[in-house]
Length: 262
Length: 374
Image (cartoon, rainbow over all chains, first blue to last red; front, top):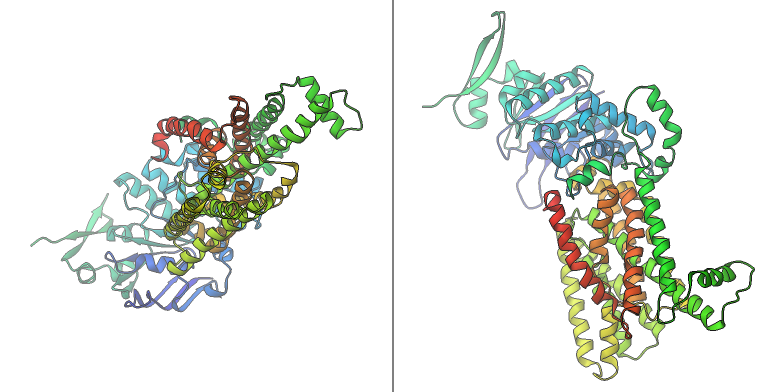
């Protein structure tokens, strides 16, 4: 049981490849971060995994099934997507939005039944925002909105969660809250893949990391192996220092990434 | 839409009507688990029931009003004699006025108003755009040209209707194919194609008006373009077929249309086949609009304004929004048509009244809804 990507290549016709031979693997229970500068192809990887870019070369397998052979709803039952933000034109409530996560489990002409309502409610409770269920999504804060989208993915009951920069645009407290939920979800057996612009978050919430640059994997492995001065400086093309900071009584330490100004 | 709406109206109308009707049976168990699962309260169903009663009341009232006022009891007697094996004591003229003139007209008002509003609601969800109206992809301009052409050629009324219906479908088909050819399923391209095709058919309408005899044909083209239910007869019952088909398909897809309003990427990630779902929704809405327009001529504003009104009543969830839009659209048009045919001795074209009432109404709505989507 795992999500595997082998030699993924993707490009738009007449232009150079956006992804050039990407191989990745996500197992249930682990969190893989994709770290890379703007335009490195992070979002394109997610779009390929979600079956939105179907004209890729290479193989993507979901629990052994070739992604291309799976119907859309079946993909959605295995992989859930948490976008960076959602913009709804009409005033749907938080509960409405989470309930929409049940869509891949409904019959073609069906609507959510009692069980679907219960699962949506459980998902809201799991991320701790059940009290917001009746609010319009536009009324809740950015951090809460991110939690709503995570809850929707949970209601979807997919084994793999793909999160597109889940901590972007959040204040520090909400970043920590979202990372904590991601850690919990991985512990509960979800296979999590997230893109991020914060190398620190890799140490905080991820078990493995892939550095993506120019559509190629620059390095991959555990955060301790991969996120180093050399690798980060090369990835972002600015000098970066990875420091170890003692925590609490000094028995633990955390790594943090700092820019080096000349 | 206004905050107040978000707070009060959709406690749980996120569900379909079907599951709403099972609420009573579910409530004890929800209480037993001690959790306040937000379920469809009776709210959505109750509100729809109120809208249905409103529609029936307006329809009945409209049967009483006209140049020849008839008492409620007489109308009831005539309706009963038509439906039940009883005989009416009313004079023959009165029976004719009610059954042959007013009933077809009220039914047409309900069907046309309902179809336009339902199609508008579907387009607003599909295009995620509060300004979408049923004519967005060119169906009304196409139908307008079809009717104008048939009138110019002096064809009989049934041919005018058929031509309007056919050209309405043709215009949307063209817009859709142009968009397919130009873009990779982008909604913006589809809207732009619709705008272009509309402009094209508007120009063709102008040509027919330019060529038409200013004393005979031009007035009939102009009146057709202003809309009205004056020419509706019992024969027009045929238009119910495409309208029912479109409405039925939209009802079957009600949850999927709801999910479409999340946007392409998220709808796709939830397992929706975007291209196919969109095509079916466009097809259904177009069938309904083309059939409605071929009955009534061009009646603007109903398809744009009524879905907003419906959203204020039952919330944005399409499973409730679709029936609410249909019921309100029917009520709106029956009410306006009653004014149109009885306010002055000459009949006022419907399209004029819907715009006169619709425009200020829409501004009021915008003022209330500012924080919602503007």
